[in-house]
Length: 277
Image (cartoon, rainbow, N blue to C red; front, side, top):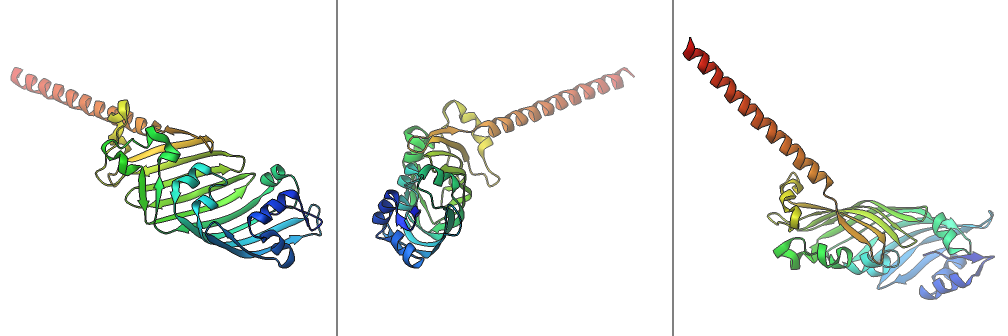
């Protein structure tokens, strides 16, 4: 949560944030303690403002406890916040200049954090749309609600973007994510969706490539890319790696066939020479 200050007085933007967080900004100015609610969860920590520099710089270290995904993620990535039915706990360190221009502030923010959640559900339709969320064919209905036992993510904030390099949703269906969510409403991240053992996927004209989507453990892994406006992102299948593996396999098979053919021809030639002699 970010306050924007002007000589220790709250600007209109900061007053809105203060009202939305039950006086959190005023509390920070008075004592440096962060205490407030976010959704049904709690936010605590320490904050300070360095008034000796121009513009002043604020720093905050916060601990989140059981904050719903809709409240924590929703303001930055609405679709993702809508898709996650869980609550997060974790720690976040942020700093930035105390300036009245929200756009400049977004670009100047920096920090890092890590969050985790226990059991929950990921709804795939808000993120992938009706078409892609039905990829697993007969298992489509089950795929649209993915239960998980834990959710782990590490993030860093830089140049107006929240980067998540290591994100894991662990359950019968495993999801790994990497990329960024922009504070300007843009997103660009990849998803590796590993289906349960024995589950297959309906890829339409690309179904023949399914065998080349299998991981080392034999489970089908669907590679996706999500990009564009966070409210309505573009979701696409990334089949390049599978196509390369298919071409390599086809090349290996052709080499084997040629080798067998040439080997057979050589054997026939040797037999003919032996008969002639």
